[in-house]
Length: 144
Ligand SMILES: [Zn+2]
Image (cartoon, rainbow, N blue to C red; front, side, top):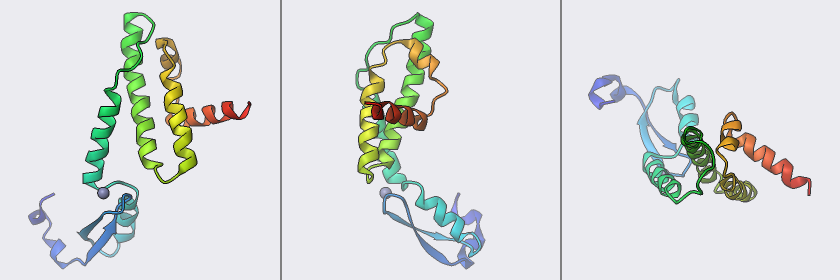
């Protein structure tokens, strides 16, 4: 939003808000909203880090992925599903940088799901979120 669309900003106090990545922004905010906004900002990366992460994710995703077995229609669908899951895992990995154990689990899961080479598996598991996959993977590992 352009600065001149909210003239009241001039009368509001200036706050320094810290993003998840540690970078700060300066915002003019009304006192009643500052806690909410501070919480929102603290949960996301700054725009620069967000862009950097997005391009990291697209380059990770453009690595040659194993071909999927299935009918042409199944494969096309499964490839889209796989891209979504992988991008979810890569996102979670970027968020978990400071959590060593969770990073390791995500790394293993990432390698593990790449071994799923049938379109059917991706279609059957399309309702699973990344956290569901993490939980299943973790429970499976603990059985050994
Ligand atoms: Zn940043």
